[in-house]
Length: 320
Image (tube, rainbow, N blue to C red; front, top):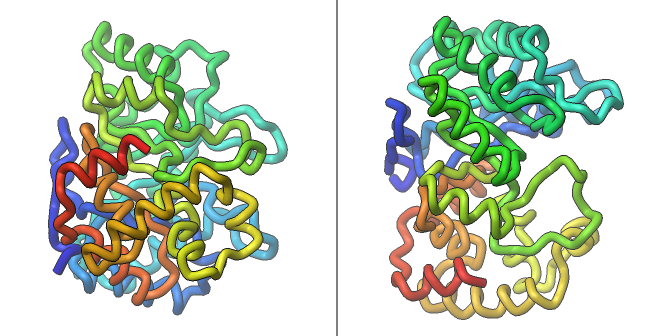
């Protein structure tokens, strides 16, 4: 099974599947039964890496707070320890209309304590700072999660939506203090270029400086929105919906779609599968987060792992 393929996140003992299941729909867009079925299908295909966050899916009306973490915790409890998974969650996200990240010591510690409770875990495998607050000294921010690591509440920590400049500063601060530092970064990234104004300004996508940082440092990327809402498959099937079109439909992406379609036809695959495979073979370790809703989508996503693209095809796609 393609889900059984594993890669070790450098500087950790976390051996994870080549794709990560996004948990933003758990307990929200997907009810308990559908969420449990999705998680069962994920591990049933041999995959073991699951991503959630303390605020998923708090933006929906009439759902319990932190429903994704809570639903995942209920599934883990229901399975009685019969599943071997690596769980990543995120904290420090803005709340209550205040755009600032909540990265002070007390708040981060509270988010970690609640996540441990909701997930039913003694220790978090991987904890991301969900946002950055550039007004705060990076050493202060990093020191909080390093403290949690040394206490054994988190095994490793990472960042999400951080700029290249701030990650460089964090790397230097970790080196100065003898800290572990970030072991991964989660930005938005796919081969599709998002249209301006269609994303929150505090959500950072891969840019040239960020890519240079990852190439230089080797820090792994575990990107969200890696499938670009299925844009490349939808455009090829003339099934582009309004939401996806608003976010991604532009001349550059249509040119990329045409090239992806050519390569996909050559390999008997879908354009999205080809894109995911190319990303998995980036110069730096990349483990795309996939937003599946059904077992069929899980199987389709994991099929990307086994594609045998040529190095030239992958280099071409990654340069688009």
